[in-house]
Image (cartoon, rainbow, N blue to C red; front, side, top):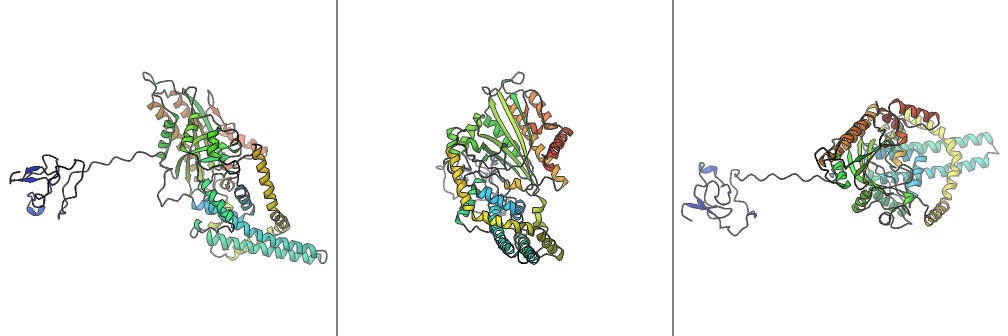
Length: 575
Protein backbone atom coordinates (compact mmCIF):
# COMPACT_ATOMS: atom_id res chain seq x y z
CA UNK A 1 0.00 0.00 0.00
CA UNK A 2 1.42 3.43 -0.99
CA UNK A 3 1.41 6.44 1.36
CA UNK A 4 -1.27 8.03 -0.82
CA UNK A 5 -3.67 5.09 -0.42
CA UNK A 6 -6.24 4.24 2.22
CA UNK A 7 -7.63 0.92 3.36
CA UNK A 8 -11.31 0.20 3.05
CA UNK A 9 -12.75 -0.11 6.59
CA UNK A 10 -14.97 -2.95 5.44
CA UNK A 11 -12.69 -5.32 3.50
CA UNK A 12 -9.20 -3.80 4.08
CA UNK A 13 -8.45 -3.35 0.38
CA UNK A 14 -6.06 -0.54 -0.71
CA UNK A 15 -7.73 2.38 -2.50
CA UNK A 16 -6.78 5.82 -3.74
CA UNK A 17 -6.76 8.45 -0.98
CA UNK A 18 -9.68 10.33 -2.57
CA UNK A 19 -11.72 7.20 -3.37
CA UNK A 20 -15.52 7.30 -2.96
CA UNK A 21 -16.29 3.58 -3.34
CA UNK A 22 -14.05 0.60 -2.63
CA UNK A 23 -12.70 -0.99 -5.80
CA UNK A 24 -13.03 -4.47 -4.31
CA UNK A 25 -16.23 -4.61 -2.24
CA UNK A 26 -18.01 -1.51 -3.54
CA UNK A 27 -18.65 -0.10 -0.07
CA UNK A 28 -19.40 3.65 -0.16
CA UNK A 29 -16.91 5.69 1.82
CA UNK A 30 -18.17 7.92 4.64
CA UNK A 31 -17.62 11.64 4.13
CA UNK A 32 -17.29 14.21 6.89
CA UNK A 33 -19.13 17.45 5.94
CA UNK A 34 -16.97 19.43 8.39
CA UNK A 35 -14.00 19.02 6.01
CA UNK A 36 -15.63 20.96 3.14
CA UNK A 37 -16.55 17.90 1.14
CA UNK A 38 -13.12 16.27 1.26
CA UNK A 39 -12.99 12.61 2.06
CA UNK A 40 -12.36 12.05 5.74
CA UNK A 41 -9.40 10.04 6.98
CA UNK A 42 -8.19 9.15 10.41
CA UNK A 43 -9.93 6.24 12.06
CA UNK A 44 -10.71 4.66 8.73
CA UNK A 45 -7.06 4.49 7.66
CA UNK A 46 -6.11 2.83 10.91
CA UNK A 47 -8.70 0.09 10.54
CA UNK A 48 -7.13 -3.40 10.66
CA UNK A 49 -7.21 -5.56 7.54
CA UNK A 50 -10.29 -7.77 7.15
CA UNK A 51 -9.25 -10.02 4.26
CA UNK A 52 -9.96 -13.11 6.35
CA UNK A 53 -13.60 -12.25 6.90
CA UNK A 54 -16.25 -13.80 4.62
CA UNK A 55 -18.20 -11.52 2.33
CA UNK A 56 -21.52 -12.12 4.02
CA UNK A 57 -20.19 -11.14 7.44
CA UNK A 58 -21.31 -7.72 8.76
CA UNK A 59 -18.53 -6.02 10.79
CA UNK A 60 -19.25 -3.54 13.60
CA UNK A 61 -20.52 -0.16 12.33
CA UNK A 62 -18.00 2.68 11.84
CA UNK A 63 -17.61 5.32 14.57
CA UNK A 64 -20.57 7.73 14.68
CA UNK A 65 -20.22 11.10 12.98
CA UNK A 66 -22.11 14.33 13.35
CA UNK A 67 -23.89 13.91 10.03
CA UNK A 68 -26.00 11.00 8.82
CA UNK A 69 -23.66 8.56 7.16
CA UNK A 70 -24.07 7.68 3.52
CA UNK A 71 -24.32 3.94 3.08
CA UNK A 72 -25.47 1.42 0.59
CA UNK A 73 -29.24 1.10 0.28
CA UNK A 74 -30.32 -2.19 1.88
CA UNK A 75 -32.07 -4.70 -0.31
CA UNK A 76 -35.85 -4.62 0.02
CA UNK A 77 -37.20 -7.23 2.38
CA UNK A 78 -39.56 -9.57 0.51
CA UNK A 79 -43.10 -9.72 1.91
CA UNK A 80 -43.89 -12.74 4.07
CA UNK A 81 -45.61 -15.63 2.30
CA UNK A 82 -49.39 -15.70 2.60
CA UNK A 83 -50.60 -17.68 5.57
CA UNK A 84 -53.01 -20.59 5.38
CA UNK A 85 -55.93 -18.69 6.80
CA UNK A 86 -55.20 -14.96 7.07
CA UNK A 87 -58.35 -14.24 9.08
CA UNK A 88 -58.13 -17.36 11.20
CA UNK A 89 -54.52 -16.89 12.25
CA UNK A 90 -53.57 -15.66 15.68
CA UNK A 91 -55.18 -12.24 16.09
CA UNK A 92 -53.35 -9.33 17.69
CA UNK A 93 -53.49 -9.07 21.44
CA UNK A 94 -56.00 -6.23 21.25
CA UNK A 95 -58.48 -8.20 19.14
CA UNK A 96 -61.00 -9.98 21.36
CA UNK A 97 -61.93 -13.52 20.50
CA UNK A 98 -65.56 -13.09 21.59
CA UNK A 99 -68.22 -10.48 20.86
CA UNK A 100 -68.83 -8.68 24.14
CA UNK A 101 -72.37 -7.59 23.31
CA UNK A 102 -73.58 -11.06 22.34
CA UNK A 103 -71.97 -12.59 25.43
CA UNK A 104 -73.54 -10.13 27.84
CA UNK A 105 -76.95 -10.43 26.15
CA UNK A 106 -76.85 -14.18 26.73
CA UNK A 107 -75.74 -13.61 30.32
CA UNK A 108 -78.76 -11.37 30.78
CA UNK A 109 -80.93 -14.05 29.15
CA UNK A 110 -80.01 -16.73 31.71
CA UNK A 111 -80.73 -14.31 34.56
CA UNK A 112 -84.09 -13.07 33.29
CA UNK A 113 -85.44 -16.25 31.66
CA UNK A 114 -85.74 -19.24 34.01
CA UNK A 115 -86.44 -21.75 31.25
CA UNK A 116 -83.46 -20.54 29.21
CA UNK A 117 -81.11 -20.89 32.18
CA UNK A 118 -82.44 -24.37 32.96
CA UNK A 119 -81.94 -25.54 29.36
CA UNK A 120 -78.39 -24.15 29.31
CA UNK A 121 -77.43 -25.98 32.51
CA UNK A 122 -79.22 -29.26 31.75
CA UNK A 123 -78.34 -29.64 28.06
CA UNK A 124 -74.74 -28.40 28.19
CA UNK A 125 -73.38 -28.85 31.70
CA UNK A 126 -75.61 -31.84 32.38
CA UNK A 127 -74.38 -33.82 29.34
CA UNK A 128 -70.77 -34.80 30.08
CA UNK A 129 -70.74 -37.49 27.38
CA UNK A 130 -72.00 -35.33 24.53
CA UNK A 131 -70.26 -32.77 22.36
CA UNK A 132 -70.85 -29.04 22.80
CA UNK A 133 -72.46 -27.09 19.98
CA UNK A 134 -70.34 -24.29 18.61
CA UNK A 135 -71.34 -20.78 19.65
CA UNK A 136 -69.58 -18.33 17.29
CA UNK A 137 -68.74 -15.07 19.00
CA UNK A 138 -69.95 -16.20 22.44
CA UNK A 139 -67.81 -16.65 25.53
CA UNK A 140 -69.60 -19.86 26.44
CA UNK A 141 -67.75 -20.31 29.73
CA UNK A 142 -68.84 -16.87 30.94
CA UNK A 143 -72.48 -17.53 30.00
CA UNK A 144 -72.49 -20.91 31.76
CA UNK A 145 -71.03 -19.39 34.93
CA UNK A 146 -73.81 -16.82 34.96
CA UNK A 147 -76.33 -19.59 34.23
CA UNK A 148 -75.24 -21.52 37.33
CA UNK A 149 -75.48 -18.36 39.46
CA UNK A 150 -78.95 -17.67 38.03
CA UNK A 151 -80.09 -21.24 38.77
CA UNK A 152 -78.94 -20.96 42.40
CA UNK A 153 -80.99 -17.80 42.87
CA UNK A 154 -83.99 -19.26 41.05
CA UNK A 155 -83.87 -22.40 43.22
CA UNK A 156 -83.88 -20.26 46.39
CA UNK A 157 -86.90 -18.38 45.06
CA UNK A 158 -88.71 -21.64 44.27
CA UNK A 159 -87.96 -23.02 47.76
CA UNK A 160 -89.50 -19.93 49.38
CA UNK A 161 -92.53 -20.14 47.12
CA UNK A 162 -92.90 -23.87 47.78
CA UNK A 163 -92.87 -23.30 51.55
CA UNK A 164 -95.42 -20.53 51.10
CA UNK A 165 -97.57 -22.83 48.98
CA UNK A 166 -97.54 -25.49 51.70
CA UNK A 167 -98.45 -22.91 54.33
CA UNK A 168 -101.35 -21.66 52.23
CA UNK A 169 -102.45 -25.22 51.56
CA UNK A 170 -102.47 -26.08 55.28
CA UNK A 171 -104.36 -22.98 56.42
CA UNK A 172 -106.65 -22.69 53.43
CA UNK A 173 -109.55 -24.71 54.94
CA UNK A 174 -109.60 -22.47 58.03
CA UNK A 175 -109.82 -19.05 56.45
CA UNK A 176 -110.13 -19.50 52.72
CA UNK A 177 -110.37 -15.94 51.48
CA UNK A 178 -107.87 -14.30 53.81
CA UNK A 179 -105.29 -17.07 53.45
CA UNK A 180 -105.51 -17.02 49.66
CA UNK A 181 -105.14 -13.25 49.46
CA UNK A 182 -102.23 -13.17 51.91
CA UNK A 183 -100.54 -16.07 50.12
CA UNK A 184 -100.77 -14.40 46.74
CA UNK A 185 -99.56 -11.10 48.22
CA UNK A 186 -96.56 -12.81 49.82
CA UNK A 187 -95.77 -14.59 46.55
CA UNK A 188 -96.02 -11.27 44.74
CA UNK A 189 -93.49 -9.74 47.15
CA UNK A 190 -91.05 -12.65 46.76
CA UNK A 191 -91.19 -12.55 42.97
CA UNK A 192 -90.97 -8.74 42.87
CA UNK A 193 -87.92 -8.67 45.14
CA UNK A 194 -86.23 -11.34 43.04
CA UNK A 195 -87.07 -9.50 39.81
CA UNK A 196 -85.72 -6.17 41.11
CA UNK A 197 -82.57 -7.93 42.34
CA UNK A 198 -82.02 -9.51 38.94
CA UNK A 199 -82.59 -6.39 36.88
CA UNK A 200 -80.72 -3.85 39.02
CA UNK A 201 -78.50 -5.92 41.29
CA UNK A 202 -77.16 -8.13 38.49
CA UNK A 203 -78.01 -6.93 34.97
CA UNK A 204 -77.65 -3.17 35.49
CA UNK A 205 -74.74 -3.56 37.92
CA UNK A 206 -72.66 -6.07 35.94
CA UNK A 207 -73.96 -6.58 32.38
CA UNK A 208 -74.11 -3.08 30.91
CA UNK A 209 -71.60 -2.04 28.27
CA UNK A 210 -69.61 0.14 30.62
CA UNK A 211 -69.27 -2.38 33.47
CA UNK A 212 -69.31 -5.81 31.82
CA UNK A 213 -66.23 -7.98 32.34
CA UNK A 214 -66.26 -11.68 31.38
CA UNK A 215 -63.39 -12.33 33.80
CA UNK A 216 -65.61 -11.29 36.72
CA UNK A 217 -68.31 -13.89 36.06
CA UNK A 218 -69.44 -15.63 39.29
CA UNK A 219 -67.48 -18.83 39.87
CA UNK A 220 -69.36 -22.08 40.50
CA UNK A 221 -69.37 -23.39 44.06
CA UNK A 222 -68.68 -26.94 42.94
CA UNK A 223 -65.17 -27.89 41.81
CA UNK A 224 -66.76 -30.40 39.44
CA UNK A 225 -68.69 -27.63 37.68
CA UNK A 226 -65.53 -25.53 37.47
CA UNK A 227 -63.65 -28.36 35.78
CA UNK A 228 -66.61 -29.04 33.52
CA UNK A 229 -66.80 -25.43 32.30
CA UNK A 230 -63.05 -25.34 31.66
CA UNK A 231 -63.37 -28.50 29.57
CA UNK A 232 -66.32 -27.01 27.67
CA UNK A 233 -64.32 -23.87 26.87
CA UNK A 234 -61.61 -26.01 25.29
CA UNK A 235 -64.12 -28.08 23.32
CA UNK A 236 -65.83 -24.93 22.03
CA UNK A 237 -62.56 -23.77 20.44
CA UNK A 238 -61.72 -26.92 18.48
CA UNK A 239 -62.06 -27.85 14.83
CA UNK A 240 -64.66 -30.64 15.22
CA UNK A 241 -68.46 -30.33 15.16
CA UNK A 242 -70.24 -33.47 16.37
CA UNK A 243 -73.93 -32.98 15.68
CA UNK A 244 -77.08 -34.85 16.61
CA UNK A 245 -79.84 -33.43 14.37
CA UNK A 246 -80.20 -33.95 10.63
CA UNK A 247 -78.46 -30.70 9.70
CA UNK A 248 -74.75 -30.91 10.54
CA UNK A 249 -74.17 -27.18 11.02
CA UNK A 250 -75.57 -27.01 14.56
CA UNK A 251 -74.68 -23.79 16.32
CA UNK A 252 -74.32 -21.76 13.12
CA UNK A 253 -77.93 -20.68 12.78
CA UNK A 254 -80.74 -21.21 10.32
CA UNK A 255 -79.87 -22.95 7.01
CA UNK A 256 -80.35 -20.43 4.23
CA UNK A 257 -79.39 -22.03 0.91
CA UNK A 258 -77.64 -25.04 -0.53
CA UNK A 259 -76.09 -25.49 -3.96
CA UNK A 260 -73.83 -28.07 -5.55
CA UNK A 261 -72.54 -29.09 -8.97
CA UNK A 262 -70.11 -31.45 -10.66
CA UNK A 263 -67.34 -30.17 -12.95
CA UNK A 264 -65.42 -32.16 -15.55
CA UNK A 265 -61.76 -31.45 -14.73
CA UNK A 266 -60.42 -33.61 -17.58
CA UNK A 267 -61.63 -31.20 -20.29
CA UNK A 268 -58.71 -28.87 -21.19
CA UNK A 269 -58.80 -25.42 -22.67
CA UNK A 270 -58.37 -25.32 -26.43
CA UNK A 271 -54.78 -26.03 -27.42
CA UNK A 272 -53.61 -26.72 -23.86
CA UNK A 273 -53.04 -29.65 -21.56
CA UNK A 274 -54.66 -30.02 -18.15
CA UNK A 275 -52.31 -29.45 -15.21
CA UNK A 276 -53.10 -32.01 -12.49
CA UNK A 277 -54.00 -30.72 -9.04
CA UNK A 278 -55.03 -32.02 -5.64
CA UNK A 279 -58.08 -31.11 -3.63
CA UNK A 280 -55.75 -29.72 -0.95
CA UNK A 281 -54.31 -27.20 -3.41
CA UNK A 282 -57.83 -26.13 -4.35
CA UNK A 283 -58.83 -25.79 -0.69
CA UNK A 284 -55.71 -23.72 -0.02
CA UNK A 285 -56.44 -21.43 -2.95
CA UNK A 286 -60.05 -20.84 -1.89
CA UNK A 287 -59.03 -20.10 1.70
CA UNK A 288 -56.36 -17.62 0.65
CA UNK A 289 -58.60 -15.76 -1.77
CA UNK A 290 -61.49 -15.52 0.67
CA UNK A 291 -59.16 -14.41 3.45
CA UNK A 292 -58.33 -11.31 1.40
CA UNK A 293 -61.90 -10.02 1.61
CA UNK A 294 -62.26 -6.64 3.30
CA UNK A 295 -65.37 -7.60 5.22
CA UNK A 296 -65.80 -7.24 8.99
CA UNK A 297 -64.90 -10.25 11.05
CA UNK A 298 -63.90 -12.63 8.23
CA UNK A 299 -62.95 -15.97 9.78
CA UNK A 300 -61.78 -18.92 7.67
CA UNK A 301 -61.09 -22.36 9.12
CA UNK A 302 -61.27 -26.06 8.39
CA UNK A 303 -64.00 -27.86 10.36
CA UNK A 304 -64.76 -31.56 10.56
CA UNK A 305 -68.47 -32.48 10.73
CA UNK A 306 -69.66 -35.90 11.87
CA UNK A 307 -72.93 -37.22 13.27
CA UNK A 308 -72.60 -38.38 16.88
CA UNK A 309 -74.40 -41.64 16.08
CA UNK A 310 -71.62 -42.63 13.64
CA UNK A 311 -68.71 -42.42 16.07
CA UNK A 312 -69.12 -45.96 17.43
CA UNK A 313 -69.42 -47.83 14.13
CA UNK A 314 -69.81 -45.52 11.12
CA UNK A 315 -66.33 -44.00 10.84
CA UNK A 316 -62.99 -45.65 10.11
CA UNK A 317 -60.67 -46.78 12.89
CA UNK A 318 -58.26 -43.86 12.54
CA UNK A 319 -61.02 -41.28 12.78
CA UNK A 320 -62.61 -43.07 15.74
CA UNK A 321 -59.25 -43.27 17.53
CA UNK A 322 -58.73 -39.51 17.26
CA UNK A 323 -62.31 -38.44 17.87
CA UNK A 324 -63.36 -40.92 20.53
CA UNK A 325 -60.39 -42.37 22.43
CA UNK A 326 -62.68 -43.16 25.38
CA UNK A 327 -66.19 -44.38 24.56
CA UNK A 328 -67.36 -43.45 28.08
CA UNK A 329 -66.34 -39.82 27.61
CA UNK A 330 -67.13 -37.00 25.20
CA UNK A 331 -65.63 -36.69 21.71
CA UNK A 332 -62.43 -34.75 21.37
CA UNK A 333 -62.67 -31.14 20.32
CA UNK A 334 -59.72 -31.19 17.91
CA UNK A 335 -58.20 -33.54 15.36
CA UNK A 336 -54.85 -33.42 13.64
CA UNK A 337 -54.31 -31.66 10.29
CA UNK A 338 -53.15 -35.01 8.90
CA UNK A 339 -56.55 -36.58 9.58
CA UNK A 340 -58.34 -33.61 8.01
CA UNK A 341 -56.11 -33.97 4.97
CA UNK A 342 -56.82 -37.71 4.68
CA UNK A 343 -60.59 -37.22 5.03
CA UNK A 344 -60.57 -34.41 2.49
CA UNK A 345 -58.68 -36.69 0.11
CA UNK A 346 -61.28 -39.42 0.59
CA UNK A 347 -64.26 -37.10 0.19
CA UNK A 348 -66.94 -39.76 0.76
CA UNK A 349 -66.60 -40.82 4.41
CA UNK A 350 -69.15 -40.14 7.12
CA UNK A 351 -66.81 -37.60 8.71
CA UNK A 352 -66.38 -34.76 6.23
CA UNK A 353 -64.19 -31.65 6.36
CA UNK A 354 -65.59 -28.31 5.22
CA UNK A 355 -64.01 -24.94 4.61
CA UNK A 356 -66.05 -22.69 6.92
CA UNK A 357 -66.11 -19.01 5.93
CA UNK A 358 -67.85 -16.83 8.51
CA UNK A 359 -68.48 -13.09 8.28
CA UNK A 360 -69.60 -11.44 11.52
CA UNK A 361 -71.09 -7.96 11.75
CA UNK A 362 -73.21 -5.78 13.96
CA UNK A 363 -71.06 -6.44 17.04
CA UNK A 364 -71.50 -10.17 16.58
CA UNK A 365 -75.29 -10.10 16.25
CA UNK A 366 -75.22 -11.12 12.58
CA UNK A 367 -73.06 -14.03 11.46
CA UNK A 368 -73.33 -15.51 7.97
CA UNK A 369 -71.34 -18.71 7.35
CA UNK A 370 -70.69 -20.45 4.06
CA UNK A 371 -69.56 -24.08 4.26
CA UNK A 372 -67.70 -25.24 1.14
CA UNK A 373 -66.61 -28.79 0.38
CA UNK A 374 -64.70 -29.98 -2.70
CA UNK A 375 -64.14 -33.63 -3.60
CA UNK A 376 -62.38 -35.24 -6.56
CA UNK A 377 -64.33 -38.22 -7.92
CA UNK A 378 -64.08 -40.82 -10.71
CA UNK A 379 -60.34 -41.22 -10.93
CA UNK A 380 -59.85 -37.48 -10.30
CA UNK A 381 -61.61 -36.45 -13.50
CA UNK A 382 -64.75 -35.03 -11.83
CA UNK A 383 -64.86 -32.33 -9.17
CA UNK A 384 -67.85 -32.12 -6.82
CA UNK A 385 -68.36 -28.70 -5.21
CA UNK A 386 -70.93 -28.10 -2.48
CA UNK A 387 -71.91 -24.88 -0.70
CA UNK A 388 -74.27 -24.41 2.26
CA UNK A 389 -75.11 -21.09 3.90
CA UNK A 390 -76.28 -20.57 7.49
CA UNK A 391 -77.28 -17.42 9.36
CA UNK A 392 -77.15 -16.48 13.03
CA UNK A 393 -79.83 -13.85 13.58
CA UNK A 394 -79.79 -11.06 16.19
CA UNK A 395 -80.55 -11.90 19.82
CA UNK A 396 -84.17 -11.52 20.93
CA UNK A 397 -85.15 -8.04 22.01
CA UNK A 398 -86.14 -9.10 25.54
CA UNK A 399 -82.60 -10.33 26.20
CA UNK A 400 -81.15 -6.89 25.38
CA UNK A 401 -82.62 -5.46 28.56
CA UNK A 402 -79.19 -4.37 29.84
CA UNK A 403 -79.05 -1.59 27.23
CA UNK A 404 -82.29 -0.06 28.51
CA UNK A 405 -81.71 -0.13 32.27
CA UNK A 406 -80.50 2.81 34.30
CA UNK A 407 -78.31 2.50 37.37
CA UNK A 408 -81.40 2.88 39.56
CA UNK A 409 -85.03 2.41 38.50
CA UNK A 410 -87.40 5.28 37.91
CA UNK A 411 -90.87 4.99 39.41
CA UNK A 412 -92.31 3.91 36.07
CA UNK A 413 -89.64 1.20 35.62
CA UNK A 414 -90.09 0.07 39.22
CA UNK A 415 -93.84 -0.15 38.80
CA UNK A 416 -93.52 -2.05 35.49
CA UNK A 417 -91.33 -4.70 37.14
CA UNK A 418 -93.61 -4.98 40.17
CA UNK A 419 -96.69 -5.31 37.95
CA UNK A 420 -95.04 -7.99 35.82
CA UNK A 421 -94.07 -9.83 39.03
CA UNK A 422 -97.69 -9.79 40.12
CA UNK A 423 -98.71 -11.43 36.84
CA UNK A 424 -96.05 -14.14 37.18
CA UNK A 425 -96.51 -14.79 40.89
CA UNK A 426 -99.54 -17.17 40.77
CA UNK A 427 -97.94 -19.37 38.11
CA UNK A 428 -94.62 -19.52 39.93
CA UNK A 429 -96.37 -20.22 43.24
CA UNK A 430 -98.19 -23.24 41.84
CA UNK A 431 -95.16 -24.53 39.94
CA UNK A 432 -92.62 -24.06 42.74
CA UNK A 433 -93.39 -27.35 44.59
CA UNK A 434 -92.88 -29.35 41.40
CA UNK A 435 -89.57 -27.57 40.73
CA UNK A 436 -88.37 -28.27 44.28
CA UNK A 437 -89.36 -31.94 44.08
CA UNK A 438 -87.58 -32.29 40.74
CA UNK A 439 -84.49 -30.72 42.30
CA UNK A 440 -84.58 -33.12 45.27
CA UNK A 441 -84.80 -36.11 42.95
CA UNK A 442 -82.28 -34.75 40.44
CA UNK A 443 -79.41 -37.00 41.71
CA UNK A 444 -81.61 -40.06 41.18
CA UNK A 445 -82.71 -38.83 37.75
CA UNK A 446 -79.11 -38.07 36.78
CA UNK A 447 -77.93 -41.53 37.88
CA UNK A 448 -80.66 -43.19 35.81
CA UNK A 449 -79.74 -41.08 32.78
CA UNK A 450 -76.07 -42.03 33.08
CA UNK A 451 -76.95 -45.73 33.34
CA UNK A 452 -79.19 -45.46 30.28
CA UNK A 453 -76.44 -43.74 28.29
CA UNK A 454 -73.89 -46.37 29.35
CA UNK A 455 -76.29 -49.07 28.16
CA UNK A 456 -76.72 -47.29 24.83
CA UNK A 457 -72.94 -47.09 24.43
CA UNK A 458 -72.63 -50.84 25.00
CA UNK A 459 -75.36 -51.42 22.41
CA UNK A 460 -73.66 -48.95 20.02
CA UNK A 461 -76.77 -46.79 19.79
CA UNK A 462 -75.64 -43.70 21.74
CA UNK A 463 -75.48 -40.37 19.93
CA UNK A 464 -72.56 -38.22 21.10
CA UNK A 465 -73.70 -35.22 19.08
CA UNK A 466 -74.84 -31.85 20.34
CA UNK A 467 -78.44 -30.86 19.75
CA UNK A 468 -78.72 -27.59 21.73
CA UNK A 469 -76.92 -24.36 20.89
CA UNK A 470 -77.26 -21.51 23.35
CA UNK A 471 -76.63 -18.98 20.58
CA UNK A 472 -79.26 -20.51 18.30
CA UNK A 473 -81.80 -20.65 21.12
CA UNK A 474 -81.44 -16.93 21.81
CA UNK A 475 -81.81 -15.88 18.16
CA UNK A 476 -84.78 -13.79 17.09
CA UNK A 477 -87.12 -14.59 14.22
CA UNK A 478 -86.91 -11.09 12.80
CA UNK A 479 -84.34 -8.41 12.12
CA UNK A 480 -84.15 -5.37 14.37
CA UNK A 481 -82.76 -3.06 11.69
CA UNK A 482 -83.42 -2.83 7.98
CA UNK A 483 -79.69 -2.65 7.31
CA UNK A 484 -79.12 -5.95 9.08
CA UNK A 485 -81.08 -7.73 6.37
CA UNK A 486 -79.14 -5.90 3.66
CA UNK A 487 -75.82 -6.70 5.32
CA UNK A 488 -76.75 -10.35 5.52
CA UNK A 489 -77.15 -10.30 1.75
CA UNK A 490 -73.90 -8.37 1.43
CA UNK A 491 -71.93 -10.89 3.49
CA UNK A 492 -73.41 -14.02 1.95
CA UNK A 493 -73.28 -12.92 -1.69
CA UNK A 494 -69.82 -11.40 -1.44
CA UNK A 495 -68.39 -14.61 -0.01
CA UNK A 496 -70.20 -16.74 -2.61
CA UNK A 497 -68.90 -14.51 -5.41
CA UNK A 498 -65.34 -14.72 -4.13
CA UNK A 499 -65.48 -18.51 -3.73
CA UNK A 500 -66.83 -19.05 -7.24
CA UNK A 501 -64.40 -16.51 -8.75
CA UNK A 502 -61.50 -18.23 -6.98
CA UNK A 503 -62.72 -21.56 -8.32
CA UNK A 504 -62.72 -20.19 -11.88
CA UNK A 505 -59.23 -18.72 -11.39
CA UNK A 506 -57.90 -22.02 -10.11
CA UNK A 507 -59.32 -23.97 -13.05
CA UNK A 508 -57.94 -21.48 -15.55
CA UNK A 509 -54.51 -21.68 -13.92
CA UNK A 510 -54.64 -25.45 -14.47
CA UNK A 511 -55.75 -25.12 -18.14
CA UNK A 512 -59.21 -26.59 -17.45
CA UNK A 513 -62.12 -25.46 -19.60
CA UNK A 514 -64.27 -23.12 -17.47
CA UNK A 515 -67.16 -22.46 -19.84
CA UNK A 516 -69.62 -24.64 -17.98
CA UNK A 517 -68.34 -23.42 -14.60
CA UNK A 518 -68.81 -19.75 -15.54
CA UNK A 519 -72.36 -20.50 -16.66
CA UNK A 520 -73.16 -22.16 -13.35
CA UNK A 521 -71.47 -19.36 -11.45
CA UNK A 522 -73.73 -16.84 -13.16
CA UNK A 523 -76.80 -18.91 -12.33
CA UNK A 524 -75.86 -19.26 -8.66
CA UNK A 525 -74.95 -15.58 -8.32
CA UNK A 526 -78.20 -14.43 -9.90
CA UNK A 527 -80.66 -16.75 -8.22
CA UNK A 528 -78.82 -18.82 -5.64
CA UNK A 529 -80.18 -21.92 -7.39
CA UNK A 530 -79.12 -24.20 -10.20
CA UNK A 531 -81.60 -26.65 -11.67
CA UNK A 532 -80.65 -29.00 -14.45
CA UNK A 533 -77.78 -31.17 -15.56
CA UNK A 534 -75.96 -32.94 -12.77
CA UNK A 535 -76.57 -30.22 -10.16
CA UNK A 536 -78.43 -31.00 -6.96
CA UNK A 537 -80.28 -28.73 -4.56
CA UNK A 538 -81.69 -28.91 -1.08
CA UNK A 539 -85.44 -29.24 -1.36
CA UNK A 540 -86.05 -26.67 1.36
CA UNK A 541 -84.25 -24.04 -0.71
CA UNK A 542 -86.03 -24.65 -4.02
CA UNK A 543 -87.89 -21.60 -5.25
CA UNK A 544 -87.12 -18.23 -6.76
CA UNK A 545 -88.59 -14.94 -5.65
CA UNK A 546 -92.29 -15.19 -4.92
CA UNK A 547 -92.23 -18.98 -5.25
CA UNK A 548 -90.17 -19.33 -2.10
CA UNK A 549 -92.37 -16.87 -0.27
CA UNK A 550 -95.38 -18.94 -1.29
CA UNK A 551 -93.64 -22.04 -0.01
CA UNK A 552 -93.19 -20.41 3.39
CA UNK A 553 -96.80 -19.25 3.38
CA UNK A 554 -97.91 -22.84 2.78
CA UNK A 555 -95.70 -23.90 5.69
CA UNK A 556 -97.37 -21.32 7.93
CA UNK A 557 -100.85 -22.57 7.07
CA UNK A 558 -99.69 -26.09 7.91
CA UNK A 559 -98.46 -24.96 11.30
CA UNK A 560 -94.72 -24.90 10.50
CA UNK A 561 -93.94 -21.22 10.13
CA UNK A 562 -90.47 -20.32 8.90
CA UNK A 563 -88.62 -17.58 10.75
CA UNK A 564 -88.87 -14.31 8.81
CA UNK A 565 -85.23 -13.49 9.58
CA UNK A 566 -84.18 -16.66 7.77
CA UNK A 567 -86.88 -16.75 5.11
CA UNK A 568 -86.79 -13.20 3.82
CA UNK A 569 -83.18 -13.12 2.63
CA UNK A 570 -83.52 -16.50 0.93
CA UNK A 571 -86.61 -15.29 -0.88
CA UNK A 572 -84.79 -12.17 -2.02
CA UNK A 573 -82.03 -14.18 -3.67
CA UNK A 574 -84.00 -14.51 -6.86
CA UNK A 575 -84.99 -10.88 -7.08
